[in-house]
Image (cartoon, rainbow, N blue to C red; front, side, top):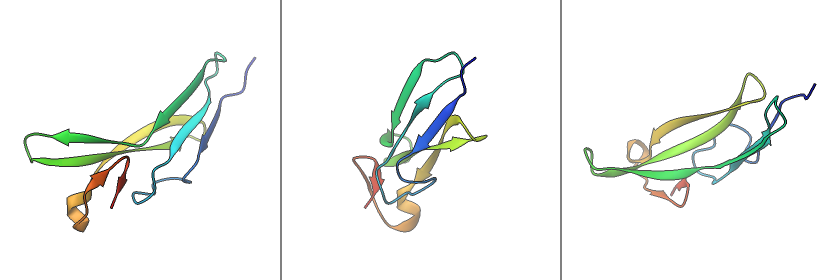
Length: 79
C-alpha cells in the first residue's frame, strides 16, 4: 500500500510566486502541476491557476484573477 504525498513549492496559495505541486497518488503514480496563467477571452484578462495541496495529499487548483489586485498573470504568478 502506497501513501499519497503532496508537496507545494510555494507553500499553499501564494499568488505572487510561481510554484509547483508534486507528489504521488495512492496508486503510486507521480504528478507535477505548475502554477500557470489561463487567458479568459470573456473578461479579456489572464487568470492565475494556483495549485496547492488539499486534504492533505491531494492536488487541487483555484483560479485567481490577478486584475483584482491590479496585477497581471505572467508565467504562473501575479506581477
